[in-house]
Length: 180
Image 1: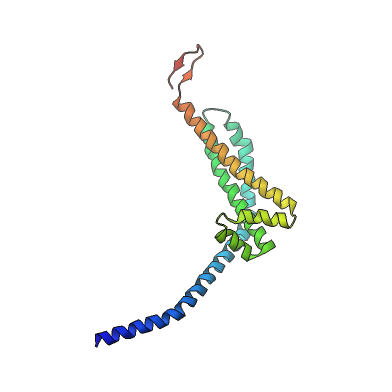
Image 2: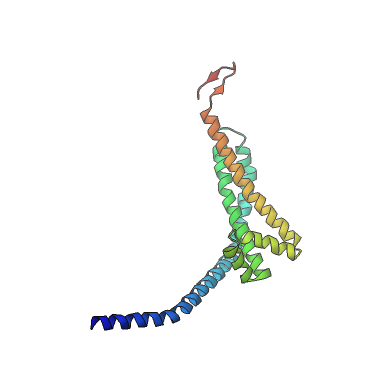
């Protein structure tokens, strides 16, 4: 008797599998579209905040952190500040790229950029700016890339330079090595 019940269950599971696979695929596509729409919505809503934060971070980098990097005692703090500012610049660049791709090429290109290319939406935004001859947007994207990775590399370099200065001995005024 149990064997008959088990075989009915197997038959029911096998026949339900034919219906479940398309349902799971449709549900997965729906979730991906919902995720893409959510990213675009969040980028659109956060863009004014990100622009303000990027402007403030740029001013802080230029007028506070750059002069701080000249002094050995504050060099590590300047490096950390520049490193963290690069994440603000990167978030702004990502949101800008996301919106530009969706408004010019649609959600399909956004999905291709995020899923199939594996590198993100920025290269797709660069291609969209090239193909649509949006030279000002292309320059803004290139400036954003340079700002993001430039401040990150500069901050890392400052941190490593500050660490080397603490580890290595220094020379006194007579030219003799003295420990820190």
